[in-house]
Amino acid sequence: MNYQCRSTKIPVKTCTTICDCQLSSVPMKQRFIEPIFQAYVKKPDSKPLHCLSNKCDTCLSEYFDKRLQGSYKQIFHEQKDTLEMARPTAIVSSPSITLTDNQMMVMQDEAIGKLQEDKKEIRKRYALMQMDDGVFILGGYIVDNETGEKRAPKRDYFYNNTSKELISIPPLPGNGRMGFGLAATDDNKIIVAGGHNFDYEPMSNVTMLDTQTNNFKWENLPDMYNGTIGPGVSVIDNILYVIGGFDFIEHDILCNGDVLLLDLEKKQWKTLPDIDPPRARPLISIVDNTDPPVLVIAGGYNFNKQGKAAPHGKIEEYNIKKKQWEVIGDIPNFKTTNGLATKNNKLFLMETSFETGENRVIKEYNLETHKWESSHNIKQSSDHHIEKNKSRTKSEHERHLS
Image (cartoon, rainbow, N blue to C red; front, side):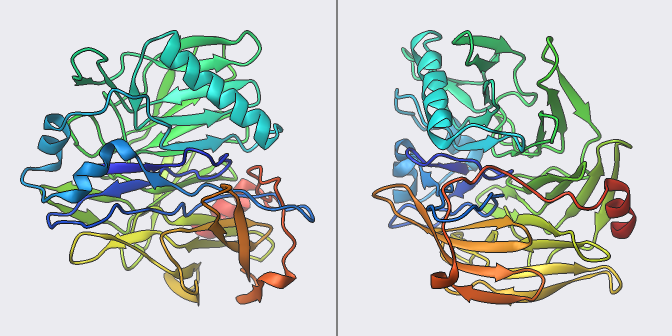
């Protein structure tokens, strides 16, 4: 069964991805804590960096203490949930966000409070998309506050920060969709890729919501070739990248190495050679001041023979001439508690203080020189708004990756 991780304290401007915990068919003595593997950070001088570090939802902890005896779908539907509002599994910010960390945290708490108090909803495994003018509450499932029955949401919500209202919007397509990849474009369109529905069927659907229109409506984009759960997702120069993910096969989890690119203007998918080994939730970035630009992935996780998630501590780039992925570096002592972020062709390795929720950059990797720098040479920053360089046009980028 797919379990998403969460963070109850840390402000998030990261991840075009949503992370997923998972169970194995053998007993697990402790809960798995999964890292976040993707972030875009703006890195001015002299302040500490914050990023997302996810932890498994406490209401699901008992799943990790016993052997699975049914399929993931059976376990999900048979297991009783707590009658407590859950924190979001992930919070993703628009690339154009201008709010401070504190402003976003206050707005997110207000939105969740409105959902619980005004709508009387107990929602779990949902995601938030942070915009300057409000917060979108997307996906997940609802627990009936009287019977404890689980059901798919009939609507999602937009919290308008000006009017302080929680506005109903059409539900995310997928009938209780969870485990999806989430990203936003430069012009504040929300894109959701993959995931699974309420019956734990993997989804190939990709859908988009234009947040700038008065009438919110999900617009389906071309489906992916196969369904996938927990992919790495990013939008760079109007290209949607969907890389990796996994599927549930009864008691087992099977990762994939698919590398898909969707031109959001032409609405056409392209593929690149698979990543090997297959994995879920890799960070996706572009080194864009080279000719041609270079597609880079880092981190992610796969699963060992016991079915436990294992971090993949490698950095890879796609060699266009050879049409293959090449390892360019290792991520030293990479753990599930580490975070990764990219900015200005740099990769940042971070560790999180569980007391303060702060992320500290401990090493910096230059994606152009393929060299690590030690932490004492790195200036810290608390302003980690999602940001990416755009020194090359989409047409050039697309041409080189064709």
